[in-house]
Image (tube, rainbow, N blue to C red; front, side, top):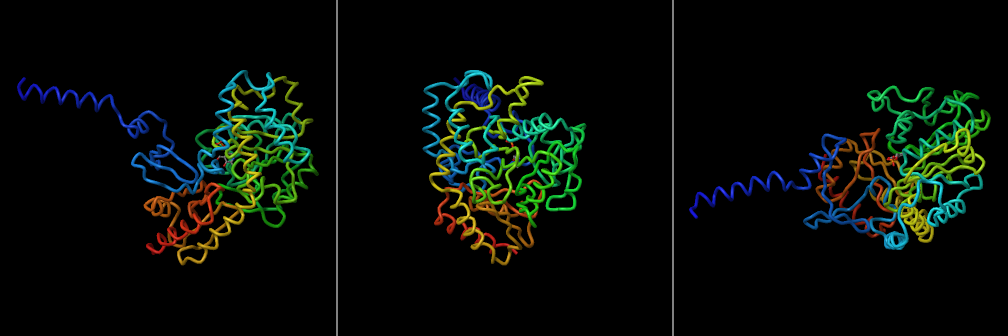
Amino acid sequence: MNNLFIKNIYGAFRFFVKKHMLTNRQIFFEHIAQTTPEPMGLEITHAKGIYLYDKNNTEYIDLVSGVSVSNLGHLHPKVTSAITEQLEKYMHLMVYGDFIQAPQVKLAKKLSDVLPDNLNCTYFVNSGSEAIDGALKLAKRCTGRREIIAFKNAYHGGTHGALSILGNEEMKNAFRPLLPDIRQLRYNNIKDLEQITEKTACVVVEPIQAEAGIILPENNFLEALNKRCKETGSLLIFDEIQMGFGRTGELFAFQKYNVTPDILCLAKAMGGGMPIGAFISSKENMSKLTYNPMLGHITTFGGHPVCCAAALASLNTIIEEKLPAQAEKKGKLFEENLINHPQVKTIRRVGLMLAVELKNHDSMDAINLLIKDKLIVDPFLFNMNAFRIAPPLIITEKEIEQISETITKCLDSIS
Ligand code: PLP
């Protein structure tokens, strides 16, 4: 064999490899639908607790928790054993609602035990957006009304129903027509509540606005909202999809205020890393989904037994390990460590979720700065001035001290 022949064969081999053996990164950009022009694009091979690792085994610290999902950190042993145990019994059996499945039953009972009496009946779904859509349908069905009220700068999800009540016009414009009869009020504006009338089926609110950059209710706003809903017979829907399961310092955010919603929407942290959501209301309200029409909401995978088993283990662990109380203490520690830095303009915080606003830099500057030191933080959808710190609730105080030191050093390096 002469050299030229070998060279040609080698060249053809390289061409074949290049064409057919794409890297994960190439496949990601070529064959996975993208939603931003510049995704972070970290390639994570494994994760444990608050740590993520790439293929070079570089360790990153997760200060986002997959956007308030991994409250128990990654691969919590109680969650993974619950999953393994259920996998040995069964996975999907039947579309939602027909069979009695122990993981669903146990989870629904536990949720009823920890929630007020009027939230005693759970409809399991697959995601936050589906929980919102289900809740909107339930409110229409229960009241016979059409109008839906929501708030500016609120995020409720990406399906057509959830998008219709999104508090940001720019994100909706390309997808119109959306649901009719939607009215958008200003969050924390008591005067606007007069627009809730006998025509209003429901008011959907995040008790603490997350994607707006952590905006807390002021001047008893939620109490006033609840009062107006009671006066008009409109159902009050709380979207705790991002804030639920201990993030705020309470198991659920509404427990911080003197208000119980008529319908509670949950997802994200609910499954301990598995996909599951729920809308929860009274048995009386929920019974309306069984007639006029029957099958008022249908889902194939809602309440998947493996996800329910994971969700129950996760909920039990959050309660047993008193993670809500820890969230408050740990969040405060983060805040105290960072608030006096000359680059920090302000910090808004609830529990272990912080919106850190810098004086001279926006959230993308902060993200690009901190990732160099392997800290993963995130922007908010509707507030580009602040970056998000929302680590798993199992983070230790020692880790917070170390991370705060790294953040401080990073902030020292900019002007
Ligand atoms: N509601 C809130 C407050 C959220 O933060 C999100 C997601 O970020 C949703 C609803 C939608 O949840 P999902 O993405 O699971 O559909």
